[in-house]
Structure formats: C-alpha cells, structure tokens
Length: 484
Image 1 (cartoon, rainbow, N blue to C red):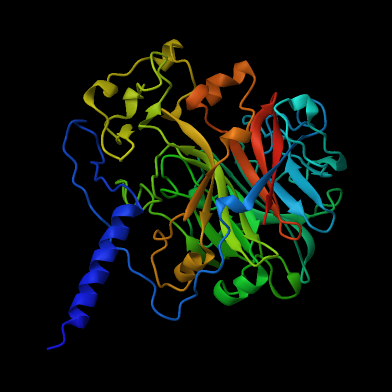
Image 2 (image 1 turned 90 degrees about the vertical axis):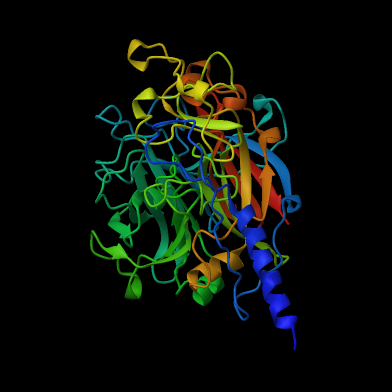
C-alpha cells in the first residue's frame, strides 16, 4: 500500500495550521464585557493555499530596496483655508508634470470652515537629509489652492477622510479621482467622484458608491493599479481605494478595492451609482465578528493606515505598500491617555457593557485593574481627546504581495487571508515635534499617534512620497524614498 499521499496530506494540514497560527491573534471576546476576568477561547482560522495555475509571486520589493533621500517642506502661510497647516489629508503624484497634488487645511464641521480641503499642485524640490527643519527646501506652487469640491460632501465634514489619485487615461484625459468620508460615517452617503486636473475648471462628477461595501472600508486612501495587472486580474479596474477605520469597524486591517468609474468613451456614471468593484483585500469587521481573528497579523484596534501605493520598479520588482501608524503596544484601549503611566490604561467606562474596551496585544482582555477608569471627561479631568489609545505606536510601511491580491480577486482565497510579507519602521526619519497644544489630540512620546499619513508613488523614477503629519508646526513634511 502506498502511504505517500496520506503523508503528503498530513504535511499540508500541518502547514495550514502553522500558517493559521501566524495569521493573527484570535481571541474570542464576548460582545458585552460583563466581566473582564472571563476566560477566552482561542480559535485558529483555516488558511488554504492557492491551487496550481494561480498567479505566482514575482520579484518582490523588500524593505532594503527603499533608500531614504530626505524631506522637503510645503509652502504657503498659516491662515485657513489657504494653508497646509492641519491639512495633508490626501496626496497624489502627477507623472505628466512631475508634481504632487496635496489637500490643505481640513474642513471643520458645523460651518466653522466649510471651504477647507482645498487642493494645490506643487513642484518637487530635491529632498535633503537633515535633523534641522530649517535645512529643508520648500516646494513651490504650480497651481495654487482651489476649492474644487465646493458644494460637495457637505454632509461629511466632521473629521474628513479624503483620498486622491491622478490618472490620465485615454478615455478621460487627466483627472483627479477623489474619495470622501468622515470619522463617523453616515449611512447612504456616496463617497467617490472626480474633478479635472485643471483646478480652475474642476467640473466635479459623482457621487458614487463602491459596490455595496461598508463606507468604513472604502474612502480613506487611493492609488493607481498598473494597467497590465488590472487587465489580467481585476477586470480592467485601474483605481484602488480603501480605508482602515480604527476600532475595526471597516475591517481589522487595511482594505483595498479595485474600480473604474467611467463608462464607454469616458462617460461619468449617474449620481448615486453603485460602481462595480473587485475585492482585493478585506479583513473581517467587528460588526461581522467581534473577535480578534480573520485580521491582519498583529492587528490592534488602535492601528491607523492612511496611505497606499502600488509599486513597480524598472528592475521588475513589485509590491503594494500601505503607510500608517501601527499600534505596537502591550495593550490598547478606548478612552484616554493615563497620565500616571504609559503602561496603564484609562478606559471609557460608559462603553464597558457594549464591547471590550481594553485588550492586551494578543487580543485577550486587559487585567481587572485596567477597568477602573482614571478621569471624567465631563469634568475636564482627561488629559487627551477620547479615542483608541495604545501604550506604543510606530510609523510603518507594510508590504503586500500583489499575487495574493490576485488570488483574492479570483476567489481562490478569502479576502482576509493575505498578510504583509515585510514591515519597515520609519520612525528614525521623522521629526515627531508637533505644536505643544496639539498633544491633547496626538499624544506624546511612545504614545504619539497620527505620525504619518498619505503616500504617493512616481513609478517612472521610483520615488515614494510619504507625508509626516504635524512635523512643521501644524504643517506636514514630505519624506522621500528611492525604490530600487
């Protein structure tokens, strides 16, 4: 009797279990935290391998292929809305002009700044490596600030989430594709559109939905998809869009969808259209599964992924990058910073019966002493704004294999199975010196959040641009890497 097939099957099972163990910490948690000391059951998701004939991994970009070139500053004054201070929500590269489009000061809710998030086009100076901001060169305006989205998305102005992508397609000519959401999303609020790259004549077209996807997973960042890949694996959908909402509301990790908004001859769809999409990456949300499973490796609810880029190099390498501020602490919680110690939580007691407000890094419940609370927001005792906090954050670039995303699009693996194959910590290049008055929102030291935001990629010259938020007073600074 030939035992080789049985042995081979047994080996495959062991490999699958090993991969499942590495996928993410998977601790089941009750939806209402009646007792933080309750034992938790552990579940391991089954991870299947792609069948023969699915797209192979190519020559992947590795962290060592990124060489830091330095940074540069953004021009303009400090007076909103015509300033980059408290802006930089979105950025995209224009290969036709070798320029960047960047958004200015965000809109503010309740009519406090209704003309925020204006867009400007900037030249790209030679970046400089220096610990001194005064040594950095300034970009120049190519097109000054323009309120190209005036009258649009006026129902989504409470902490806006914006994505931009320049694309000059033969069917449409040069356009800026845009996504728009807000911190607490409104159900039924369409999220996508486009404007002309000539900011004086924007001619807005939209608003559209990305299929029937949750708005918490679609409207935070955008990037272009190489046409040959999109034609082969994503039904000719050349734009990528996604979002990662802290707390896992859109998915326990970043999301990526491919879409193309125009019809025959470049025609814009009707307002309210649900555009067809290809799901490339989508982890399970807390609404579908409150447990820390079917998620990104090392996922924590305080994670922030704010930018992305589909990288191809002249040497034939490729990767899909996500940029953000990764929660890497020993614990994370919903509430405030605890002034007593960065290792102590300060939970919001008003939500302890709704969800588990404090978790250890492995997803299990924090110990009982972390559920006592430490301040009263109504009495102005809390030292920071309320939100998801962690004992530590790090600015990171994470790397995904496009072949894994192709397998998701083909239905060969689940949308939550792809995992980053590499991570690059970039804190060493950051200034991390925000205005003192912004610490109530940003935190400080290891507990500084919102470190980096939008990304853009120049695939002709192999340049990756990443915004560091609150680096030059309230303004962002642009950091630059060469990708070989």
